[in-house]
Amino acid sequence: MTTYKLNNLNLEKFKEVAAIPNYNRDAIKTGIVHVGIGGFHRAHEALYTDDLLHDKTVKDWGICGVALLDFDTKIYNTLKAQDGLYTLVVKELDGTLSRRVIGSIVEVLYAPENPIKVIEKMASPEVKIVSLTITEGGYNYNEATGEFNFENPLIQYDLEHSKSPKTIFGYLTQALKLRKENGLKGITIQSCDNIQGNGDMTKKMLMSYINVAEPELVTWVASNVSFPNAMVDRITPATSPIDISNLKETTGIDDAWPVVCEPFKQWVIEDDFISGRPAWENVGAQFVKDVEPFEKMKLQLLNAGHSVLGILGALMGYDTIDEVANNPIINSFLRAYMRHEVAPVLSDLNGVDLEAYEASLLERFGNIYIKDQIDRICSESSAKFPIFVLPTINSQLKENGHIEHAAFVVAAWAIYSLGQDENGKALLIKDAIKAELNEKAIASKNNPVAFLEIESVFGKLKDSKLFVETYTKAYQGICSKGVENCVLEINANMLNYN
Image (cartoon, rainbow, N blue to C red; front, side, top):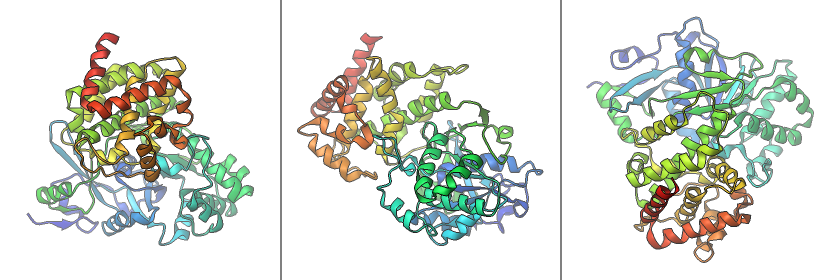
């Protein structure tokens, strides 16, 4: 099959093998600057926006994608060479593939190369929204205190080098300052990350930074910038070399970085946009007054469920999430965790069938065509556990409730942090505090509670006698019997619990 590079020039060549934009991309103005143009954004917000741009009366909501970090060079170079185009491949539950070229990213900038250009783009009059996918760890807060971490060397750098920042806080602050100086209206800053109250978190962290970096800007931001909360959902595994070669061989599309994802998608957004917004509700998004119940449901069921499967699966030697999700023993464990530990602490979900939602998650996790890498799911667990798992633990502890499954997963994480699975194979651990996790994991061989001493992750959890006892028993059980045998025992006990 003849292959062609994906770009504007060759776009029409692909219309027989993939859906392509039916709108004139040259006529689209940039209304959104998005920071963090990885797979999730391109499977989610960029898709919703592309859907909207197919209404040819919509011309003001193109996306300028910003690659913020030094190691984002590859995605920047890829999208730049492809005129912002990429292929979205949806892997259906029956194994069929649907392919679509997305055109909503009409500009791409690389922040380390030209910080001023990014600041000026964020401050330009036509931009109404700056949206973010910067990962849970990108919000720079301390779990123990809930406050902004000014000790971060990158933050200290930004405070001293305001015109060439390295963090999102430095960029946003200077862009907002420039908008104010130019007499422009404010903007909406919209988080699309997996943090409960992600808009509230963004506001709190940014205002903390501004209060130190540009204190005279605080009042203007409070009156001219909005931070809507949102719940986002779509499983988007890392793109593999096989995904790239399959696309090229079956369609002739030579795309250096396509995106693969599951068919399910969801976006629930607080309707708080200070300078206007796209009509995303016309293409499947849901605007509500209060996002919190939906956020809690998703973070503590889907995202926590991913972490459960990832940590246990990694220790057992699995490579992908579907493999561990289709292990009936682990599947039963996760089902019980969701039903007996998470579901009781959720509330205000009028109209939501929780049992049906839980069942759909197990089906989605088990999609054998997604092949979500366990390494990806387990990466940056120190930022994920406080958001996905600890709220369930803390809520159950207040009620003297059921914590056996969550404590077991925390114990498994402590053992995972030693860096080997149960077969002695090295684990690829990616975490901002990898060294500290490993140090505490080693100390836990003699004193399991040592792992809980990482206050930035666990807060004061080590002070709970009930949790420590349950966690220690789980830790010792995994060390002596292995994950699967311990889970079998827990599952048997749950039959009595029921």
